[in-house]
Length: 453
Ligand code: FCB
Image (tube, rainbow, N blue to C red; front, side):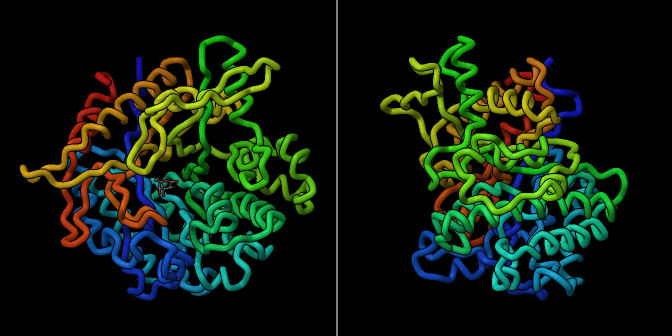
C-alpha cells in the first residue's frame, strides 16, 4: 500500500515564469510583459523577458527531467505566443515551439500535462475589456480549439486554468499582480463568472475538437484547513471552514467552493449567495450548465493550511500559529497536514480523482563552495508533506499524481527572481542549471514510488 503503481510523479512550471523569448518569433504581448515594465510593480524591476530561457533550452530541461526520472511535466502555454492578438490569427512559430517541446518530452518518456492558461493573458484582449467582456468566454473557447487541434495527438492531459483565485484576486483587486487593477468588487464577480463560463466553454471545445482519449481537469488553489485534533467536531469544523466563503469582501476570491462548486457540482455555494448576492451578476440556468462540464479529475494546488477547531458555540475557529512557527523563505507557513486533509475533504465533496498540481517551497538557496546546492529544508518539507499525501492515499483518497513546484527556479511573479522554488537551481547570469540535493532526493522517491518516505 502507499501510492498507486501508476502514480504520476511530476514537476511543474508555467510559461511566463520560465520561457523568456518575450519578443521573439511573433509572440504577442501579454499582461505580464506590460506589468513588469512599470517601475515598482515587481521586485528589483525583474521581468520574464528572459526568465530561464526555456524557449531555447527546452531540450536541456527535458534531459534534466529524464535524468531525475520525472514522469510528467506540467507546463502552460503562452496564449499570446500562439495567438498574438488572443483571438483570430495563429502564429505558426508559436505552435511549432510547443510541438517541439511536447515531442521532446514524449520521446524521452515524459508525459505532458498542459495548462491552457496560467495568468499570461493576451494584452490585446485585455485592451478589449479582458474578462469583463462577455466575449471573453468565446475567446477562451476559440483558443482551446486551437490547442485541441494542434496538440491533442500527443498531449492527453489538460488543465483549463491555473488558480482563478489569484488571477482575479491579485490581478484585479489587490493589484499585486498583472494587470495591476484595483477594480470594484462587483466587477471582480462579473469577471469571475465569465472565467467560470470560459472554463466550461473550453472543456467543451477540447472535447469537440480534440482527440477522443484526452482527459481534462482544472487547477484552482486554496488554503486548506486541517483539524486541531481527531475529535469529530474539530474535523467537521475544518471541513466547514475549508468550503466556507470568507466574510470579508476584500478576501472573497480566497475560497474553494465558489470556484469549484459550479464547475463540479453545477451550483453556487449558498453562503456565497447570502454574503455576496448583491454583487453577483445574473447567472442563468444555462450559465451554470456551461460551467458544469464533466471533468476527468480534480487538480488542486496546495501549499499550506490553517489549523481549525470547533469553537465554544460550535462554529469553526482558526487556531493561532504558535510563536516561532516554521515558515519558508517566501514566509508561507509549513503545515504538512494540509496534504492529508486537503485532498481528503476535496475528494469527499467532489468525488473526482485528485492530482496535486502544485506543492513546494522557496528556500534561500545558493551554490556552495563544493559547487553543489544543498537544500535540506526543501527535502524535509517535501518529505513531511508527501508522507501526509501517502497517508491520504492509504486511507482511500483517489490520488493519481503530484507535481512538485517547481522543476526549476523561475520568475516568481511580483517577487521576481528573489524566491527560489526549484529542485533545480538556475544561475540567471549564465543560465546554468544545477540539480539541487532535493532534486536527487526526489529522483529516489520517484524510483521507489514513495515506499521509503
Ligand atoms: C502558485 C502559482 C505558481 C507559483 C507558485 C509558487 O500560486 O500558481 O505559478 O508562483 O504559486
